[in-house]
Image 1 (cartoon, one colour):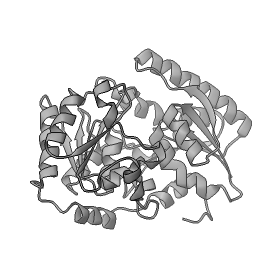
Image 2 (tube, helix red, strand yellow):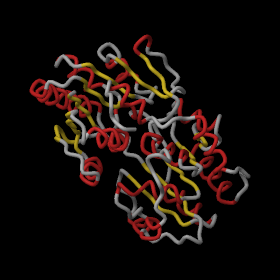
Image 3 (tube, rainbow, N blue to C red):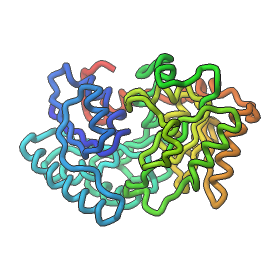
Image 4 (cartoon, one colour):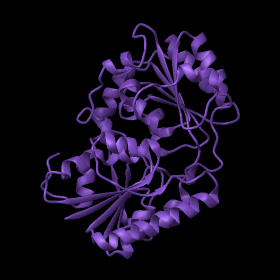
Length: 345
């Protein structure tokens, strides 16, 4: 069986990583096609995944996003016509469903992002199957399949991930002091257009440090030089070890918020956009705090301060245990969706 995987953002590497590794020693042939970014290719190289770069990352304008998307799809189609895969897959599935359909392949999309309305609308007519977490708010009809899990559990379920306590220490984190991880996004994805998060990251850092935390900042955008000594200094493939050690996450990134939550680290998500999984992680498991609205900046900081001060009075590890009891490791679901048989879980 021939399988083509499209990867356009760093989290996609993590999502497909274990599937690609499981397929490698088998008779199945897998090829990976990538939209380049420094982090994406660094992750692929770190995990030893062979890949072909088709385009660079687009700039944040709508015109740039559309142009980059069309270029990626046209180059992907040329390679698929030569490779002749049986199945093409991708998160979001826009490029995979379009190019894969023209190439005569079965197309399988995975998504967890309801507000990616344009991408979802352009994917749905072409994808043969669309797989989402069971908390996904929308319904794609007969081709829609749901699984009891989150994208992030495909690589952070205990079957897949064991935190390494040496990573925070190597990054200069004092194990005796609380740790807060702050995340800024670049808002360059098509579904991020018009969204917003924190008002002032320096204010966030100063207030969290005043609450007694050591702060590490991970950012997709340039930050003030005053924050250089707080930069998260770990290779991208090791960031989850630091998240697992953290006492609180505060950030604009929904993916990293969910990663923190499934690791048992309380996540304060400050973003005008909400998804089914951020809602469920808050309402059902109490591992995530959604902060939206005009006062989201201050509310997010105040929430993180309460967590650091112990005022939330939650046993976050017990909440994580409940989540793991109720949710599955998506690895087998992904293999089954691709139609792959005889591959060890």
